[in-house]
Length: 311
Image (tube, rainbow, N blue to C red):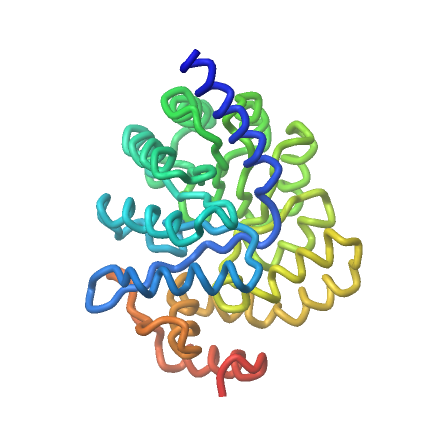
């Protein structure tokens, strides 16, 4: 009976994740202070996002500097986020690695900690084949039995997960969606065409968020939501309500910020902006990332001023 109860509970969680994961999903930064995780700063950011209407939160993604977090820090960031959210919005924990064994370990932790799903990047640097990608995700699904959002970002990883491989993975009950960050609407369209209707396709780039909705996507895992969470959430809300004109106007209003947040490597500009706005105490990033150059910082500040985010 206990096993049946657990299975029923897991099935309920899977359907819940499929229903709720959409809209403006923030890939939240990880605030640091004097080289250490700023736990209160993270809690304050999470609370700001929930109150601003952000639909879901992703800790320990690329924007969260997962690559330079220790395992203990990674787990702590996930735990703090879940604790502060208190079930008000879904939490999709970044758990991917270029090691399948490490990915399984981090995904099991996210499941135990109470996340709603895991965001699992294609293994980077290794450059696996399409078969290797498929086997990697199937191993994670088999070992963890936990809702999983694939993450395809070839600009970071050096490998592009093709739509046919995504569709093959989508046959597994635990693979519920993908963050598609190629910047190619053709690839997004092919994923949507090839995968089940229930499969959640999310833009991985702010500049393709609105177009992705228009061709059948469900939302965006966003960098811009770090800085303007209410506006990003409103753009999604307007679209879902059928007010396409208002959604489009917000898309173009935010477009200068979409560009400015990539004047240098993400999340350097996002942290610089948040510190200037007083949302975090420090714009500190970890090596090998470096503080924003003065020239690009001035350019970023001009955009923030134009949006009335700083004086």
